[in-house]
Image (cartoon, rainbow, N blue to C red; front, side, top):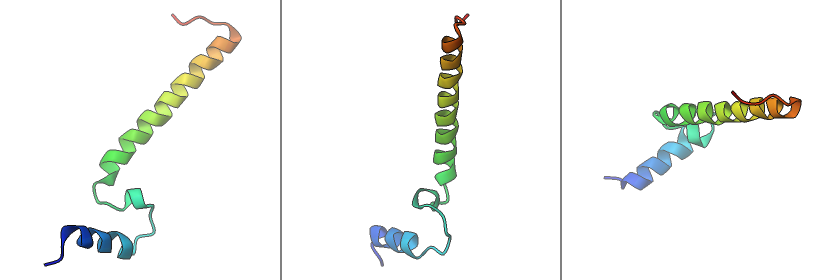
Length: 60
């Protein structure tokens, strides 16, 4: 029996999918997609209120 770490290493290094390392795991979309939604949502929120601050509108 192969040690679990070696089995995972073989899976990630010989996987024929041409994807980024953090997207190769079958459940990676459950972790990465909500992160990107929160990241871009927060960035958009920040720039929206930055624009409002630049033109002088106060937040309600």
